Length: 139
Image (spheres, rainbow, N blue to C red):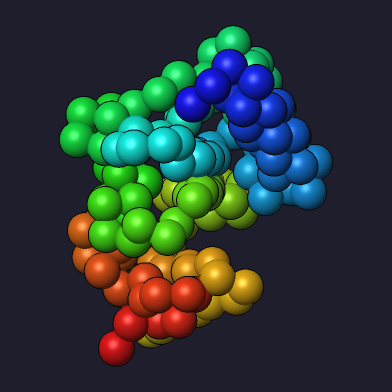
C-alpha cells in the first residue's frame, strides 16, 4: 500500500473508531480491522475506540496469531470480498458479565444488512463460514 493510501486508510480507521465510541456501540471493548493489499489487515491495539491513535495502528498477517484477531483473520481468509470487520462487546453485555448475571439463551440466526453479517459467538472459523457472499446468510 503506498504511503498516501496508507495514511488515508488510517485516518478513516480512526474516524470509524470515534463514531463507534460516540454512537455508544462500545466504550472499551471493540475490535476493528481493515483489509490491506495482500494477506494482511490493519488492526488496532487493545484499548477503547475513543483512545486509539493513528500511530498505534499496525498490520497483522492473516496467519499470525494476535490476541483478539482470530475472528477477523478467519473472515478475511474465507471471504475475499470483505474489506473490514468490526466486532464489539456492548456495555450492557459487559455489565451483565461483571455482575455475574446471566440471560436466557435465545436461538438466533445470522442476520445481514447492507453486506454486513452479525452472528452470535461460535468460534472464528464457524462464523466466517456462516457469513455468506454479499451479505447473505449461508445455508
